[in-house]
Length: 469
Ligand code: HEM
Ligand code: 2DC
Image 1 (tube, rainbow, N blue to C red):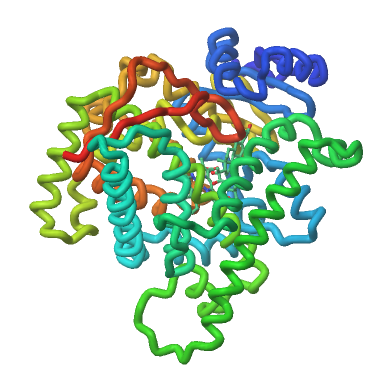
Image 2: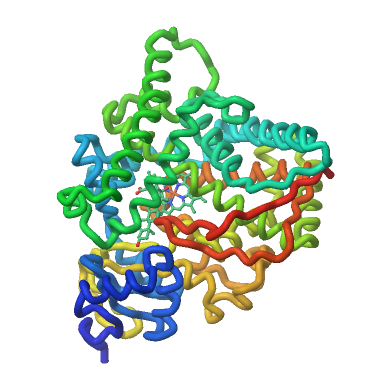
């Protein structure tokens, strides 16, 4: 017999007490580890309430399949209230990230064609390849300047710039100039604002932003300042393209970028376009850069794997004779490495949906409208799901192991990551160029773990050494 909702194990009776305990455990930074611990305590399903945030948590791929089958026509994930509150406060439109229902669907359908369709890759690849080449040139220069034939550094700032340059070139069809020695200070400020925006979001997951705003809390003020910086810079980039479009005669055959394509298409209002392009620009920085940093870290820890990947890239280069789009079809192990990075170091600690219909998971009845979370971080480290989960094994994605609902780093279905194709291509191209040019090494044995700042980040700087081959 199916057991009732009220019998799901977990701590869901007193949200305020749970919030207090959560805070004592430094839960704002340890959310991923607390989730893992909860699965160990309660089993593969538990109910939880922290502050006003209530959810049912699951970990099994089979249960994820049930969850996503019940997501309905308008999949809805947890509303990050800090983000909607800011837009309400400043009277700005929601983009596709924050919209719901029919409004979300109609915008998303149009954006899909311009942003995530495979057809667009032929436009994106040359742009992203240019950025990748410039990054390599920049590293060679740094190595030369060091006078030591190597460069040892925390690459995160460099990777933020690489990521913003990449997403910017695709969105605007032109370069922002972040691979140069002297960069626009406004672009640097944009990068800093995104980091601050994420950092100030996590406490507001559990304490209503409206309340924090009323008491004039610093976290709310910092959050507003961060989004203001993000929107101001995005507005400048968007205005710039808009002006160029109005002056142009419209003869150029070159791909003009996502923004110009959307404006020329004329199917979304300018305000809707601005809102979603701003979200794409902001969503395209910390996500890919941190994933690349973790990947370089894993390659530095596994030198023979690094050589294997390098051999695959060399063979792909030879076989594709310089056609990058073709080359991207010949690097399964590089793609496996990126999946493996997202398994052990996912950007998103969980995926969530408000289910559209009643479902049964682990023999418990869950009513429609419940927020159900798949613990992505916990699933990636579960020995019942992945054979020897602690090992970084890109080849596990090539064969043998089943992949059924196991590769979910970008989410699933029609509400999955809109930037997925850009992110994947940008990261693959980056790794190709790095493997072709440098050996990646790391200092002694410092164990780096994840810390939660809305997205999962390394808890300490990752210092790597790059040596020319
Ligand atoms: C949504 C992960 C890069 C823009 C998401 C979601 C995840 C995710 C898990 C939620 C999906 C769901 O609920 O099913 C990642 C990862 C990235 C990455 C792991 C890189 C390694 C990017 C980039 C962009 C971007 C580069 C922009 C160019 C977005 C947007 C959404 C989203 C706009 C919301 C889509 C919607 O609600 O319709 N991402 N992302 N992401 N991501 Fe990404
Ligand atoms: C954070 O409990 C933990 O891709 C919460 O590019 C549940 C939750 C809800 C939404 C998730 C968020 C988590 C992590 C960051 C995500 C976000 C949806 C989109 C966002 C996964 C798991 C992200 C990073 C976007 C951000 C774009 C934005 C800055 C414009």
